[in-house]
Image (tube, rainbow, N blue to C red; front, top):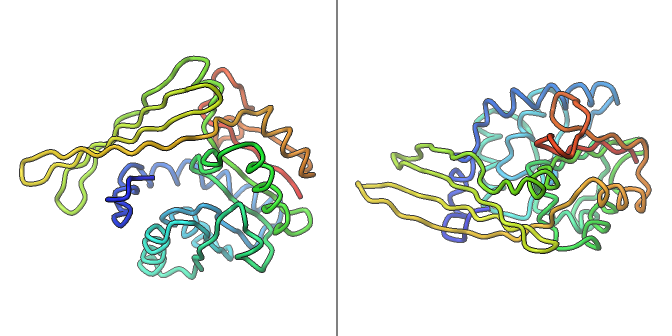
Length: 252
C-alpha cells in the first residue's frame, strides 16, 4: 500500500506492476483450476484495483471483489466500467468476511501478498476460518504470497526497480524488505518527477512473514482438505530454497 498522500491515486499502485505480463503469466493457472473444479462464482479477496476480478469476469465467471481500501475499490469500479464487465466491488475486511458478504463461492482468491498483512497467527486462523465459512462445499481457496523463507534465508531485501509514467509524471518505485525477529517490514519508496523536480515518499508496512509450516498448521486447524503447494503459476512444486512464490490451493 502507498502512504496516505497517495491512497487517492491508486493508479500509482497499478503503475508498480506490469499487469499485462502478470495476467498473461497467471491466468492459465486460475483457468485450469476453475475448470477442473467446476467453478462458477469467485470472490477476489483483497482485490485492490480489481485487475484479477475483471480478468476473471472476462473469462466468464461471476465475480465479486472485496477490499478494505475505498480508493482501490473506486479504481476497480472504474476499470470494470471501462472494460464493460459486470463485477460487484464491496468493502469487506477479510478477517470478518461473513459480516459483509452474505453469499457463498465456488472459489476464493487472495493474491498479491495480501495475507501477510495480518498481524499474528491468531488473525491468520480467523481469516482462514472466515474464508472457509463462505466457500461452497468442495470450494477452493487459492492464496499467493512471497516465499518469505527464501527471502529470509538468503537475506534478499530489494525487489526489482519499477519505472512508469502516470499523467505526465515520471515514477520510480523501490521496494525494500527487512527482517526483524518474527516480523518483516516492507518499505516502498515512491519517487515522482514533475516539472523537472523529484519528490520522494516512503511508506512502511509491517508484515507477518508466513511460511509453509505456519500455513499448514493453520489450514489443518481450520479444517481445509487436499492441500497443495506450488512455487509459481506453472504448478511447479514448492521449494523453500528456490521458489519465488508460495501458492497454495485448499479445499473446504
